[in-house]
Image (cartoon, rainbow, N blue to C red; front, side):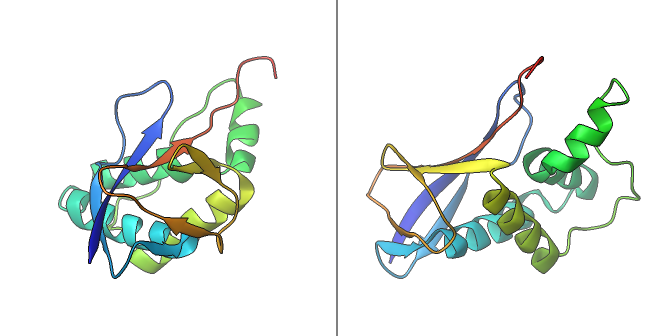
Length: 139
């Protein structure tokens, strides 16, 4: 068994998903499985406060299409839907879509992971980082 720390970062804010420890059977897994396990653990840790958990998940996985539509109005806001506890399978699917679309990237061992089915080899003491990309003003 190997534990790997997964850190989720969104540029421009200190709010976000908590770092989590993900337990793997061995040193290798796919990006898809690592995302799944990280989202499950993030929801487990932050899920006690459904409102805070929802804001953090939305901030990490809000799609580029959502951002473009909102940017046209002059302001970007987190969705104002009723706060309900996150459904793990829905959030995992949303995270997989966000990764596939390039909404966030994953770094492991100093390099960017390219695809969901790419093998990720973890090393003791090296965290995996999910970095939410944010478009710059003007382009």
